[in-house]
Length: 273
Image 1 (cartoon, rainbow, N blue to C red):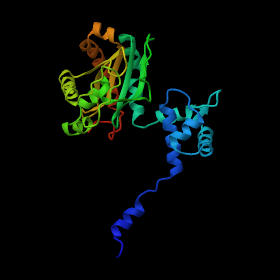
Image 2: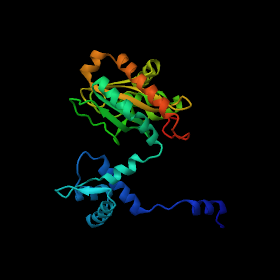
Image 3: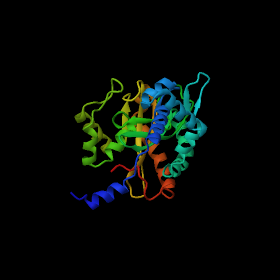
Image 4: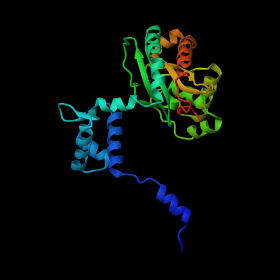
């Protein structure tokens, strides 16, 4: 049997994956998403390689200033990794437009202010400002959170077409806190409220005792391309009321969108489909 020429051509054009690059990237991802330094043994298990092979990969990444070791010999991200991340072309104009407004908004709400975009099935935080908040929170630059647990994620879900939204809600909605909504029917009701109100609210659904309000940032064509959120202790949001918080956020969001729309790439890729 003669081989199909079309299949041969497509096979020849398909790029080959390089296992060493995959292993090195996996190491960077594991270390970047960890909440503390990681040992050689743990990293070897994560990447599925022997300790010597993992050690050599880590040494190469350290030589490139992407990783470093602490006093105990465990591995952490280095500044070289941060430099690469912040140079993502589509994000730079957004961060530049938002930098000063974020700081001013943080002073107004007396909490943490987060700028995020859609990344697969998650919210990806690309910038943050805070006003000497008296609490700690997981959400920070470069961290991802599930769409269904966050106010930002609900805004992104609400901006999706019903077809795309249905695909997201077919996946299990994992509980992060006792307040997390895990029933798809209840989440649909929550998204409907988000659409009606024009803002999303998370009542301690991602982090205990912390709640947030989020509003959309729109691109040139009016589509939702990023989200602005404020996080405060739940008791503070109950006292302020989400609608008042959303009003403060909306003014800043409009300011950022106006500045950003003149510099954002026309092919900005974080808009929900």
